[in-house]
Each structure stands twice: as structure tokens, then as C-alpha cells.
Image (cartoon, helix red, strand yellow):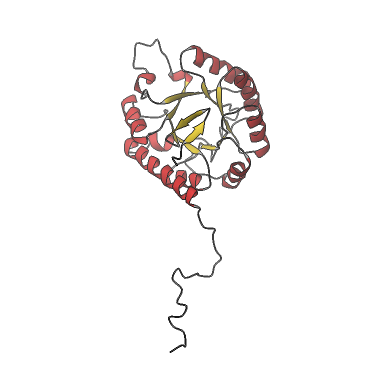
Length: 259
């Protein structure tokens, strides 16, 4: 059976979501999106200007991609809700990544304000994917409020430190019914693969691709890593053994005393 990524009532081929910030230019960004195979692309509202005469980022996003506006810059639920409504009114669609950050140093999400925004926007018909600190009880409340997925951070935004919250994310994967998508902190394809190996439904990557020496090639590497991690998870990764060895080809009988 085909292993499709299901979220927000839709089906997607790719489990790699790609952000659009920090690229050297829109042409490189477009090539990276195409090479990544991503079906869902995030963009900040402040960079969307449908009426601009200059290059518009929307013109460089492949038409087959689902656009998901993020509420970057929002400091509370009211600001996030306002950004979501503006994005929809401006023609950016109703897929919204809720991002509420009050902490300027570590850029950690504010879960309670995020939940408030989820509750309002779901009722207004938005497909809502909240960026959050990994917390099972809050994830459950967001799920109950109608979030299409939950997006726990792996590490602080742009840190490239990998999935430092692994154990908490694993708990969420086991207990939450909607897709768990690791967002923020993933710095290499191997880290994205690790997220997929523990059962995450998808990963969202931006900085690691955008600031690499070759963003297009890096996007391809992330595409392959996400696919490999997903296949490994579906195949059933063996549990780790103890410190003693276990031969893959036992010598039973070969060196026995029998003549």
C-alpha cells in the first residue's frame, strides 16, 4: 500500500515540509523546493505582498505546493489570529502554522497563547498546525481543539542542534492521534532521518537547507533522508541490545564435538 502523509483532510506524497526564509534569493529557493519534493511550504506573512511590483515570493513557489502561512512575529494569540485572518484575506489560503513566541533569546513557543489561537482559528475553518514546546498535556488539548497536527520543536529555531527533545517527542508520537511533525532545530539530513525513525509523521526544515553551501543539493539530501527514516520505521527497527555481542551467523554445530 502507498504510504501517504495525511494531514488536514488531504493526502501528500512528501513528508518533508520546507520553510522559505534565509535563502540567498528566490530563484535558489524555488530550485530547492523542487529538489526537496516538498508538497507543503511555509512562508511568513510579512514576506507575502500580492500587490507588489517587485519579485513576489509567491511567484517562486511551485503551483502544486500547498502554501502554509506561519504567524512568525506574533507575541500572543490575538496577534497570531490577526495574521492568520490577513493571510486568508490576502489569498494565501487557510493553512496556518501557529507560531507565538514571547521569548526573544531562545525563541521558544508560548504554548498557552498558541492553544488559544488554535481554538479560535479552528472554529473559523482554518487548517491549523501549531508550533509548540513538546508537552503531552498541551498537545492533547490542541488535538482536542481541532489542530490538524502538532509541531514540537526539536531544538531552538535555527540552532541546527537536532532533536534534543527526543524522549518527549517519542511520548507524543505514542499518545497523540494527529500527525506529530518535528519543527525547528534540525540541522542535518541524519537528524531528520532520526525523527522519522522514531515515528514522527513528518519534519519541517528551513535553516539547514537555506544557509548551506549548496541549498539545492542539501534539499535533495533531506528528501532522501526523510524517505529512508520513514522506511526504517515502517520496517520495524530492532531494539538495542546489551553490551555483549550477538553473532549474526552463529557457529552452532559447525565447531561442535560431533564427528
